[in-house]
Image 1 (cartoon, rainbow, N blue to C red):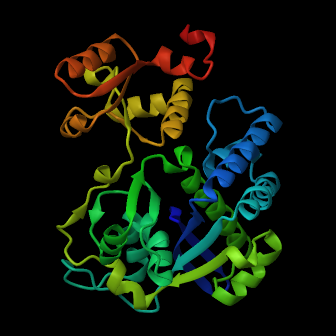
Image 2 (image 1 turned 120 degrees about the horizontal axis):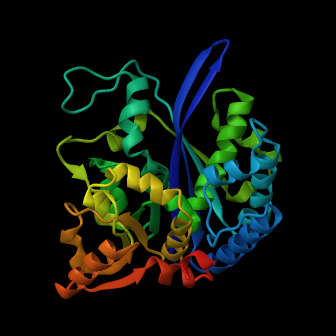
Length: 362
């Protein structure tokens, strides 16, 4: 038996009459590999009902909290969004055997010492800036570390290049760790973690009270969570030796932990100077074809990246899939294949047609 985990994070800010509270929060969902097929089937069925009910026309089967909020929320109305998440807990989480682990980090100290810094940084700076770059894997580490699980397969939503921590080293030493770009849109476990994090985080914000483990678990009970498979963990001062890096110059490169196959999209306009790279990325992500790319990546259980002509060539010998959007991309793809890189090439029309794409690509 192997445990499978999905991990994601966010920030929590509360302001009340007695002051403010700041925390990094996260969810790590876990499931036995023998139970995963049931979870997957329930997840897909739930999302198909969601798409049908709200006339969501997309080939995608995996959704992030931000997707759901955008579809369901009218202005600041939370009701439909929260009902959706309550149904997700009842119909998918509780029925599939999924374990939900909510993690929040807060620190009772005036400052935190970081290697390479002349003076301790404030807790606010540590939570808002330092942890922001790598807290995505801390929820999974917290569960693995405290429960003593080994040989798990762990999927973490993408995070920035950041200093290596003892927590990261422990996680990678005993487990398979994958960092998934757009993880909440292509990986079912990261998506579930992201959706549940949105649910719990919203409940806490509406309550507007500093989290306390025993009190919070009791408070969350009416919102559908199964007592036997719901845990709350606090990351605090005692964990600083694990989550603070030892050497700021030793970095984690998340690109080295991507799941294969990697699906590379060849930029069509920025590479010939018609658009800046960031602008083309925004254009691609707003396009209909992007929905098909996400579906393809999810189905292949891989990862997605817009091809960089400076940082990705050294990884191409490991293989992958190249997606071209136009003639320039087609020429680049064929050139790379002629060089001997073991790459599969799909153009946009071919990829879209895999999922019954519309006539615009015919």
